[in-house]
Length: 311
Image (cartoon, rainbow, N blue to C red; front, side, top):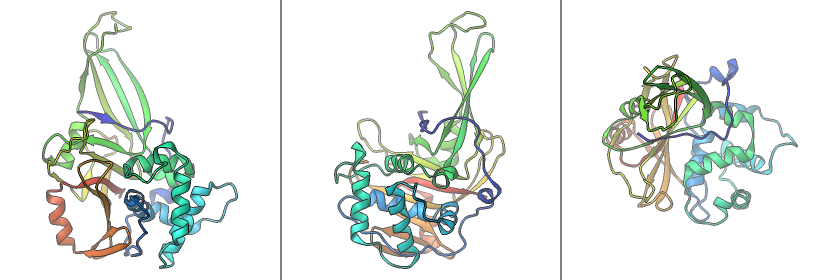
């Protein structure tokens, strides 16, 4: 099983304050205002809607006071969010300016379709605002052991999402169990203790569970070949066996992708409301019954990014 995380956000112990830990999934409907697509920007629109409807971020944004030290990108992010909260579709010029600021990063300096998870990483890195990034921080700890003498070493790294390759049709919880399954490393290095070259075993553990668990289901390989394996997406997850605290999570948003390549096709997102789900398709917002979404999640072939709130 391939494992990918993002380690550009440093390492160390993940901490949270009481206010962050008290955030729960929303019990009210999201504001049903769409965002204009100005040319292959559905990947941005879908991710923004998920961020806007992340409880910890929504609460912090309502308490935010203009800070002169904030980046221009964050100020526009706030302005777009403020329009939606007021029930007004964001202005065309604000969307244009937001995209222009993203264009300063070489991966987004065009109007081609892009990967929404890459946008997620780059956006959080550029805005560099604590209350936007902190909910997603988790920590993985790796223990590597020598099979000959059992000598072991540990290292930890932070992540903001887990990326899991889909190799077969199964439940999401099975994918997670496989992701954290001990694996044998092909290493030619000698053990520092016994001085012998023997297979090494790596064990992974979720040593600090994030407030918001973001899971990317990687359906495309390095050649952009798509896996159409259906995944059963559980709306409630309990992380047992590979996490120190066995926390429980509840699904509140997901991004779907349809297309032959991650850099083509179309992105939409589903946001959990009080009594139903809402589908955000750029400017169009539709109501989906719980049963429709429940049935879709039983055998999902298009789910790409999942957002779970810790309970």
